[in-house]
Length: 268
Image (cartoon, rainbow, N blue to C red):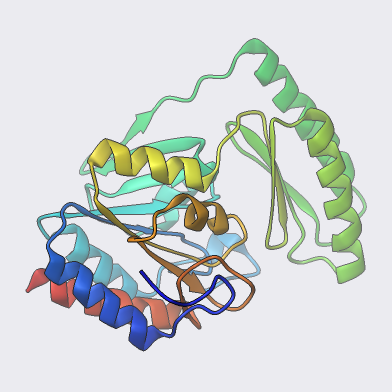
């Protein structure tokens, strides 16, 4: 679709042009799937303070309210956390824990796909939690988050040398006890279930029968989704760093402007 290489994404003008072509092509349903932190919500030192930009809330509501458009948020956050923070309309698909959790927002709450662990997986998850706590103990700015299928070692608030050591130990722990290890921006997530944003996107598009997917993300874990999507899909990297995405925008504010423009076009 784009003549740019994996390390030379096209600019936002080219992105808007290709989105215009996608809308005019009429392929439906159009699946718009978006990461949360760093993509729709500017990154915060305290993850509990993350919120989608106000203009983004409006753009997502308009997209979700348009016939032939399906909206999804695809995040590393646990499902409850994502649902609490994300101001999205009913009908939105939520993919949490990098694909290990999935739900759909309804007027009355979440319609969840139930995640069930075997006894062996539950025991391994408990052991992971205890050993991850040892990784964080005594290290300023390092803390552990527990999820239904994983534990996450966060290092965003730690000094660089402390973060490097903690992440290395967490990676080693994951190799011993985890079924899957994801090393993202200032986090190491160790899961007892194999899941990735790429697998989650493939499953969701197949379920919906979506001929075209627009996907945007900022993290290393979003590269799995970029890789899993097809040449005629539209992939967008938010921020700097090497990427396999076809297009790049500089910030969540820039992405929200693109989404607002897309909502105008599909609404028309």
